[in-house]
Length: 341
Ligand code: COA
Image: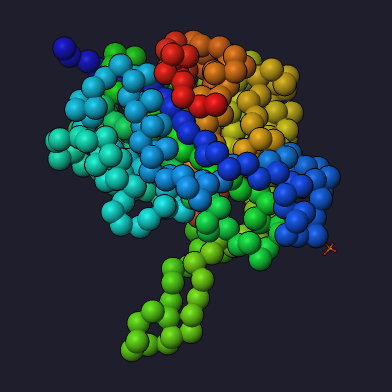
């Protein structure tokens, strides 16, 4: 069968871990309060991979869910990409772990990308390029960040924001494009806003000062950067430049970093609450996975109807950001394939 090599988002999946940590739980380790956290972020609770929970088991389930929803066989995949900046492990890569756990026989290429909370959008851009060039027909994109194990637990500003989670999507070659717009950007000049240096002090021949591998964040700088850049980026670069009117789009699915940022974009677009997908209250910031989880949950809970169109936008460490407009086709997330509680 011939196709026009246009990218179709055929199926998605997601997994959220079982350990719930509420704002009240955080008051046991910090001088903080539910009121402080909720009013500044919109977060009430988040999920962490539990002590007896293997993150890769959940990754396998989420990947299988996307493959089932896409209606393809795993052996039809010809590329696996994992977006992960706080990986469960560094080697083998998360993408190779998926390949192994799915039991894929062919030696299809598998690689990870590190673009933090922009992982899903960057992954879509890569998938689109591979498909348009004819280099791949069926791509599995997964997002997995092990935030709870890397955040700076000595910093009550940063640690309260994040949760763990996994997303998955199958992007295939077809006759019409579901990725109507995708755009990615970076500004390394402000890279010090969110950092996670690698371990130093391990080599016996050089400086042995021990370091920790911890994600630190300049919260106010990040907030100002995002609040200045993202709302006009969405209205000007994603919509206006591509001759798309905000009123022709059904949903806004922004990276779930802060409810105040979601609100600012919502107001700029003039959207009522029914068009804005937000699950930050229950899950916090799940980094690269937040957009996919929000779409999956939105469809599961009936907040998102398909077929429809959504504006998506991710932003985070780098600083990197990216946005787009995508079709959410019927069957992208089928009720019979849901395994989440
Ligand atoms: N509980 C109670 N008080 C806290 C607190 C906590 N968890 N964390 C910080 N505080 C205190 C501070 O010590 C400070 O007190 P002081 O004025 O006596 O010094 C006060 O609250 C204000 O701190 P500040 O850092 O100015 O808070 P803020 O209003 O900027 O909110 C963030 C902090 C992190 C919520 C906010 O900056 C933010 O949302 N940034 C964006 C982060 C983000 O989205 N990152 C992800 C991008 S992918």
